[in-house]
Amino acid sequence: MNDILEVKNLSISFVNRFAQAKEVVSDVSFSLKQGEVLGIVGESGSGKSVTALSILGLLPFPKARLGEKSKIYYKNTQLNGLSEAELQKIRGGKIGFVFQEPMSSLNPLHKIGKQIAETILLHQNVNIKTARQKTLRLLKMVGIKNARTRMDAFPYELSGGQRQRVMIAMAIANEPDILIADEPTTALDVTIQKQILDLLLELKKKMNMSVLFISHNLNVVRNFADRVCVMKSGKIVEQGTVEDIFQSPKHSYTKTLIYSNNILNKNNIFYKENILKVENLNVVFPLKKNFWGRTVLSLQALKDFNLTLQKGKILGIVGESGSGKSTFALSLVGLNKYLGNIYIDNQDVKTFSKHDKARMQIVFQDPYNSLDPKMTIKEIIQEGLDIHFPKMPEKQKYEQVKQVVFEVGLKEEDLAKYPHEFSGGQRQRVALARALILKPSILILDEPTSALDVEIQKHILELLLKIQAERNLTYIFISHDMNVVKNLSDEILVLKDGQIVEMGKTEDVFNHPQNDYTKNLIAASF
Image 1 (cartoon, helix red, strand yellow):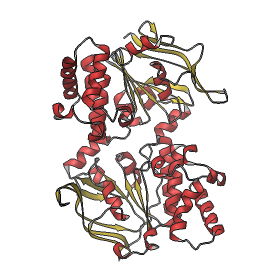
Image 2: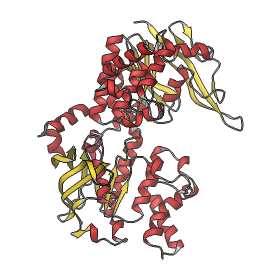
Image 3: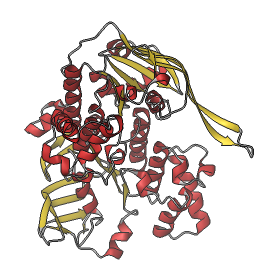
């Protein structure tokens, strides 16, 4: 096979406002062959996405600079050095790009049909009617149901999986030779993730396309790519075939990435008494009301939900988006109206005082959006004490804040910083400290590691197990990552369309699943 893309001695620097240059990618070289899938893996900040963006000249020049020896070739054409007009003919035409977060990449003010048609009109000599017809075919090709109707939908009217399919349709609209996919499945459920990957492989074969696939999910890369490049701190530390990399890794960092998926060391100490009991929990959301305010259309998000949980256990809750996982979590902490009963230590939560409510805390999926960017870390963590214990002396509050910060692996000097000054893993530690400061007996973790690299993910999970053992905590762990749930949980609850379809010990559910839906989830994950 011939090389269709070749990157030689790529170095990238960013210049700050003081005219100081910081190198983020150093002397990177790799090639992509015709019809091949090349995976690039590594932690956040390793230079994966920056490398991909540099290929099509999408870096913020002149703040970004390529090194003098850097050369990027598409077939026999050197891309770096082309004019913007020349690059535009290649972008979206010869080389398509699927970005990580489709909601940020799609224009929220324009219908998806118009956005795809614009890509076709830009690169092909066709009229609007023909472009619309091609758009319809593309939407059908990427598996959008009711494609003719969905052409007139806005991005916010589509699910995450549907938006990603639209991005793929846009990227392949002009039958490119190369598709660059930057973390295209990161925020998707395992079943949707598998559908997207199967779709990409199908399109690759149908169009004889080459794929540059960027991800921090090693399981995905292992099953999807032909060859792998491992990046760390802006350098490629190892590259080779999938078999060579995963079966005989040479570099210590590659070994760390691969073995980060190993089973965690758990301290299984359970107590006989039940800490949580849920009886006939029902949650209904009104979707449409008539002129008089009466609900005429509604969605039952949870139906006849019953659960008993022992103290000291970790309950894993899995299911696709819309299955009711987060609805259940928010109902437990009083953020959703519900019918039924929830008891903690045999006390109905409806009778809880403000002080009692501190016994159950939640850590949200995205710490960047759940932490107030205008507050310092000290203010964020202390806020719970200010609300629940307003008469506590400031000195005592500070000592508790300092103690919990040490507990989650941060430093006292971090208290004066703001959320944007931290990495994703550090922000998740801040969110954890904010919940732990109130000394809860139950901690709800809603997708706390979904956006984290595998190595950082393991650090957070080990931290959670350490804190659980020290504090005798009970966890409710919500995730779409079946591998994490398998390693962390004692029991698993499987949700579908707001109903429990299966529940049992982790090993029983994974080794002998009873429900077809559970079997599909497990098959899609492993």
